[in-house]
Image (tube, rainbow over all chains, first blue to last red; front, side, top):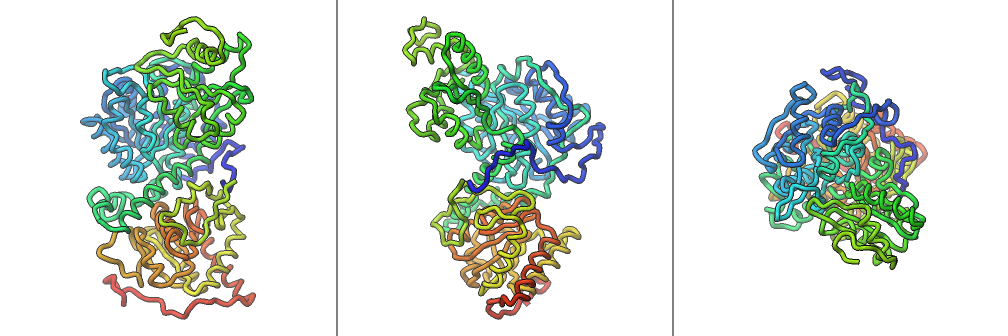
Length: 415
Length: 210
């Protein structure tokens, strides 16, 4: 790296939008994201995750939102419909399916709108083709993914497997641990995703039910402040030009020309999408305080995870501490870009790295293994899925068993 | 810190995107030279010297300055014209980004999907992109770095281009004029342009070369 990307000031370049400081039709003042989050006073509210999504979108200057029902995001999508009825959005409707919704989001974004939608589980998979299309077309759409089971037998319960399907979609992927994260990530996510050097779709992911349907205290920014609007004139590709890529590609893909130049252009295009993910690092680090959070990483044992598994890990650390076993914590906030250097640095002295996850694939453990030295230090698990909770005691048991400490049987893995 | 440097190529069959090699874009007031972050002032002189040392210095104006979609675009276009005269440099437009088949006219146009055809045909050794949408500029800059020995620069109106060997950011009319002034200053100091004599081509309203 030629330059340190961590911003000690916790700020990104101030918005120069022409509407900065003016009021919208609801009387909210268009405000720079730095002022909104680092200067304005916050108010504590006790809300479900779905209500938090509504509160974030109320302040996000979203032009258009398109909905389709699927548990557990339906409530959030309906609440955004209420915002539309109240005049906070320019347009809102229900699509014909998740695939249709994501295609319609693309149309709105191509036309220069700030676009937000929500989906979950099988809906995410049904819409999948569009996510790569969004990224390749450099559309900074935000989708909030309230993750649930995707496999057969069907489950509507929390499961983070669907995030692994999104890993190479070309989208920015942020994983919220709490309702507070969810609120902050939605609003800050728009700003990072719309930076001209990034300009990519973003999936703000949270664990369904655990976050969406649980009440939590959230510090909200003032209701009379909203983000500055999206500025399509800063887009790295032309808007809605049927003759030029990326729109042109919908009817005339490079790949249909069988020659070296077409293949080379396609490859360079894909490289550029991934380069844009890399460029998001400095904006993200400044706005959300780094791509990871670290607590006591000088300890021999670390728990490294993302989403609500971090909360469970934190409680497990407290329980272990009571028994004199000291464990540190690394919370991963962004999955794309993956904080490879940060994780490498954070775990460099650890002897054992436990990665608890709410899925059967262990995709986060694989990601971590792929970027650190001596990756046999990584213990994949404990893992649960299909809506099972991940009691802190199970993490405690896993760590103690690994250390050779006798434990009673807790969760079916034997003693 | 990254050891990667954004040098003129030819670099590779498929050169990596510089951002993926750890090159971070400059912040306001800065520029980058081959991946090294420098104060913007330093980059003006460096870019001016590169232009004057070149045999075929070329400016590639893109659609954001070729079409008068606002007064600022027109002012930028006028400033670019003066810069071209000061160097002197060829002006070869990137009028749009359409894939062109069966072939482009490399003497009078450049296309982001196969920019090397124009670089090779005209033997361009130093170029600058200005008024090109960022995605298309990065695409072309990387392909040029991969397959040619052309030294690439960018005068970007947004955050800059790490895929160029040298990049300014937040380009304005004033910044284009400052580059022109840097060229003129070097000339006054006795640095002579090495450009091969040429005549700027003109296009008729039909779009054909006049």
